[in-house]
Image (cartoon, rainbow, N blue to C red):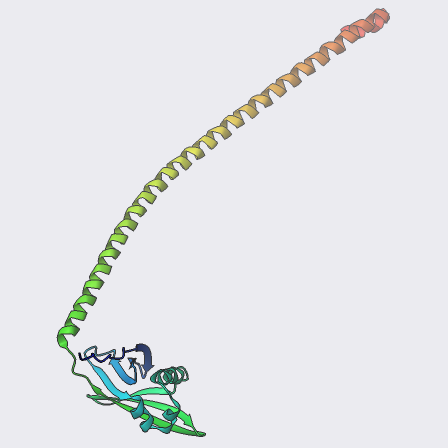
Length: 232
């Protein structure tokens, strides 16, 4: 019986980077499958354009001596990350069907410029249209959610306005109550003042009566001619 050969499983790694250059936005996508490296560039301003180059680890090593130090494609990916961070990677457009990725690397104390030529891929327009449709549908769903949220906010604002009107009415009633209390307080103060004045008059009258009584009492010991002076 023939034993089927076991195919090694593919280990796939994918990384994407946003490259902003000369007022253009590019997306660099690096896909690694075992010993294969695929470099993709998406032109953000023209979504139907995609550029690609595919090479193996051995082809990479033949391209420049700096890559001889790499034992895996993952090391190349890590190296590209460092170059991007240090702004040592640039993208150049040569014509409509080609884009160049240019790397500036230091090797043996010398600066090396390494280029990768990417050719435009033949894209599946049906997939692109489908992708655009999905994006538009997603936008429509987002718009629908935004409209619903906006309606909820409007309703909440309406309720808040009604509550605010009620609070204003209560505040107005409180102000009127305070005004009435102040008026009543002023009336009480006036009544107290009038009562104090009346008490003072009564006290003054008592003093006069007392004084007269004292004079009458003293007349018993007065001489007749002295008593007649007070009567007059």
